[in-house]
Image (cartoon, rainbow, N blue to C red; front, side, top):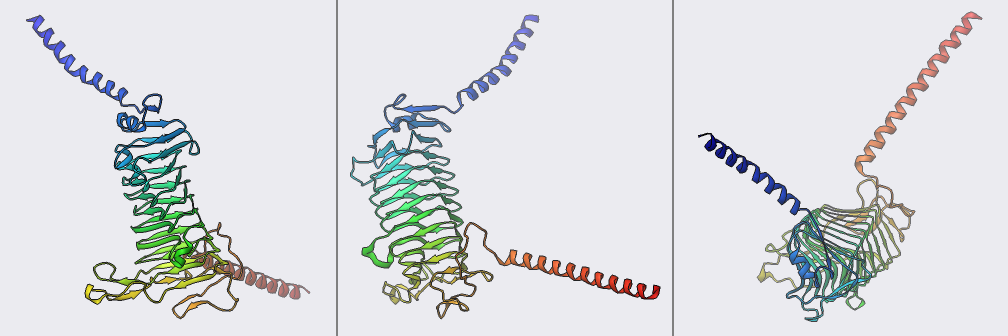
Length: 407
């Protein structure tokens, strides 16, 4: 009987202790690791396929031809893909001659850094969320350099050059596009389309657009939905517009930017309004605390659409987004401003608080809120000063009367 009790006790002990060891063993095995191409795997896709969630695939310097279909490289798990350096670690898709995507990311929480990526119909497509793309060269896409959707994505410190259509095509809400350089992209540097809460900040958007298309190409396009936050950018020397308000852009705040040397500093597109698509004009947009300098035309407002209004399809007319050119306290510096009263754009558009000297865009813009705080502080200081002055006068009178009595 005693041996039976011992056996039962041993079995219970093993039942309890084995899962603990198994858990510890699994935890050890689950630690993120780094696999290296070509040391551990000869191709990047093999390395990605054998990586676990949280691992890093490190790619040594070299020229890599990606041969997958329909994407040269597919990433469908949360990993980091890190190149040895963007100048020397080059990924291209030549097998299908630009008919496909070089890299397609379908997973969340993927980081890509340290590559030159080029030669696809789309160089890189990200449909996951919480992804990061930093320190890459994205070039020579047959269409777009980057197409990014999902949510909460970050695109920072990349160069987008000479892509045939857009440098970055953004449909990713709650995302940030910052500190990138975009130049030589055929239709526009950046387009925001059908998304909201996107911040475009500290980018250099230079020399995008195509002279053949006159005013319809340029630097940055804002359309469909919003709000958008555009601040701290240099938007310069683009063919066509610097910044365009396109179809149905709402609640975009454009401030602290240099918009310089474009054919048009700003363009308000005239577009068809259709209940099945856009049923109303975009509104709530504000442009203030910007330097708008040496553009051929500071603001170009289209008054008719390039498209034919078709009543049979339900088109109810055309129009442009509604934009305020100041925030009620401050406006913009316009290099062609004469210096008297408002800066008049047309009968419906004017900057009522223009500046006569260039603005320091590194400083925060004055808004109605901080203006009210400033006015309150000024009023308080004035009141205190007045009270002190009154007290000095009263004391002086009392001392004078006392002196006369004593005399």
